[in-house]
Length: 122
Image: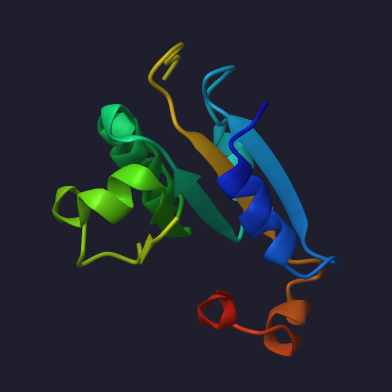
């Protein structure tokens, strides 16, 4: 079962946006998935800190904006980059210590302007 926090965030996104959930406990995100996405959401526990940062670096290398969240980012924000395009939010084969990631693309990309910004979500 995927982490419920990621599913909750996905439920807040506009229905016409496409969401891909990649559970890196099963397999790492592919370069083609980073290329497909407009932005990448990452959540994880503190033991997954290295993997959270690795996903963040991979997304930035692909030119994507990221949002980091989950218990580790909320509890230990100093372990995560503050001067990048990442934001802290409440809430690569890595069999047991991996972080789930959601890759998101807005439908037709023009829909972004008609939808509320992520800061409008609780």
